[in-house]
Image 1: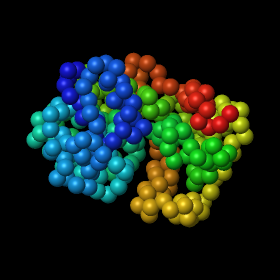
Image 2: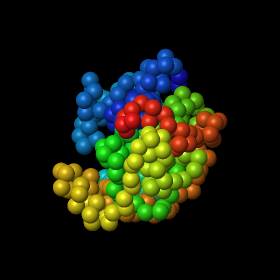
Image 3: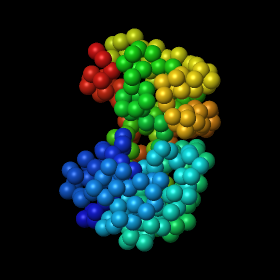
Length: 274
């Protein structure tokens, strides 16, 4: 598989760009498939899929907006069929932990008969620096409807390393890996570690789900995104995923990056302010 063309489905994102950089460093040919790619790929327009997939023999798939949405499983099943019809032999799927929709999507992928590897990841550390929380961290306060439930935040670099391993080593075919960090933290504890790393005062404030949704709506966040966040915070973040798993060590042969290391390295970039 090392000399095959690999397609990165779903855009560059937090992990896709990292996967592409690692494959390029290895000298492995890859290309993106998204709405803006040369051969466009649109999850909501299946007529675009076959042309976008043509020529690839394996794929790293990240679904947008999230595998938790109701139509995700059907889309993943249809993608797997289109991929097989296009000559693609192996799909590495980025999945979520403890999401019913993600589990249905995994089952659809397995049922398709195509070669697969599933990477179930915890919340990304990079949500604090590259995603929805960064502006609040810079402003000095993060307000979320998350209490004392702990989450073993996973570094996107570990996920990218795992994806590259799965894409380039046939030993990972047919396997599922649960990727977490080495310890679980509450969101309050995570913000405290970021504050320590930056030398700034950064507060965490727990808010009600109603206030959280109202605040998102007031800033123009689409209703579908708000519904997704309500499911992630109100249902999935209930303790079901607090357990630390050994997936990173299993696939990479090394321990995962700790959140404190992520915080120190990210603080050094200046993205959160001095």
